[in-house]
Image (cartoon, rainbow over all chains, first blue to last red; front, side, top):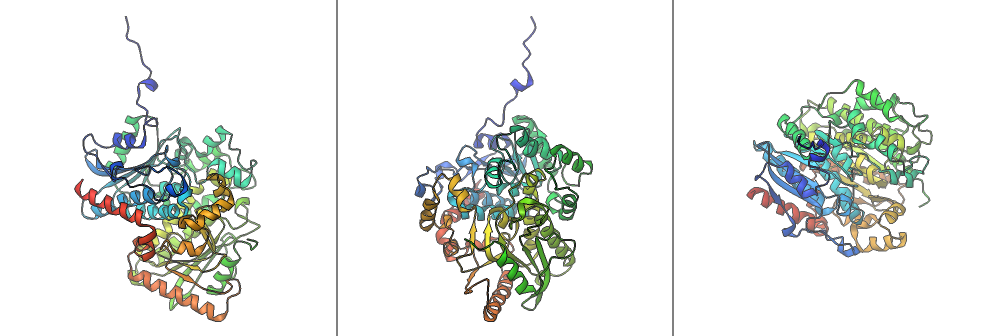
Length: 289
Length: 277
């Protein structure tokens, strides 16, 4: 009697199905991780209770320091199931603090990579201006660290990475995405609200993934690695980028190249995502591969 | 708010630089000029509305693809030109801010507006880290992704103390929808909860601003008021030169120590535990 063949899609361990803490732990070398400002420290949002919203003891942001493939690293994971992974004062400060400490250690001779697991709709509107300023500070702290150690953004799904935090992804050294992941500044619902259903029909799932989906973003050179929804595959991609180290030049420093690419587009009608992907993929700028 | 977004930005850019039209080769939405700030030659940048823009979703003063990449290109060119100068002699950069929001369009999302915004904030932030004093003058609106793209990487932020000045993550109607409140509820909450407020004096309580500047009518400034603003910019440049290149100064003010105390406390806790981890 032959053994039953279990398809790889069934046998593999899903990353998307994990919560933020389990995701972060799955990337850290076994036994090396320590959670910082964890739930027992009870650092919660002071603003949510004032508005009748139940806060969470970790504010939806998990920070785990340890090693990845034996190199110093910190993983910061946003919990998409808490307030849509939104950035508030406390969650933003946790991320900034982790990035800044990684920079300090890197400058002191111990390069420390940062891995950002971004499942977020962007700024937490109940903390509005403290969320927006937090995004500007996260971006600044990524710029400081990436000169000395890699900053690796992972967008797995299913929330995706939208709003201000899409800028944090944009300035990262490397971006890893799954097919289920999405990356953009404005979500489809927001565009439909602001500019009308003719501009963007947020019920059109195929359109959404054609524009924001991981395959498209990697294909057009705005993300680096397309991986399956698998703990092993994502861990392997992250380990590869940690080992590759800091980049000498970053994608988001290429202002003139992208200005010229935009200047070459015909704006008379909507852009065809596939055509744009082929056009931009033809000559990939340097940076990560 | 009947006043059109962008009028103040354009007026103050012209007042500070004497330049009233975009540079050739730039889109009609970007004003860029080299002009004096104090006794130093500085790069002034402003995003203005252009009803004839080839991108429909930026025509009312939103920041889109062309705007972000053009700002970044000017900033990168300045950094390159100043590359061999010592930090103390890097040219100042002044962002005059009056932006409605980021562009909410399908063209923009398809071509990756998140990345365009990242490229512009990278350019502003990298200029700051290279030693360029980066000053934002918020003359009108500074909303959301528009402000992140143009101005929020500044190491000193000045704003007019005026009802027409609003810094916020999302305009009232949209914020009300997303948080499932009425606009009236949102306005009431804003008075009780400083980070939610649309009032610039409440924003000042967050400790993020370097200075509030009083001009009776920012659309019709008098000569003395213009001089005062120029002086404030020159002082902000000197203050930025004497401080750190990162954004840590935003947490140093008495206002920040009060309003942002939860964020300051968690940073301190992460630091302590990091050292012991």
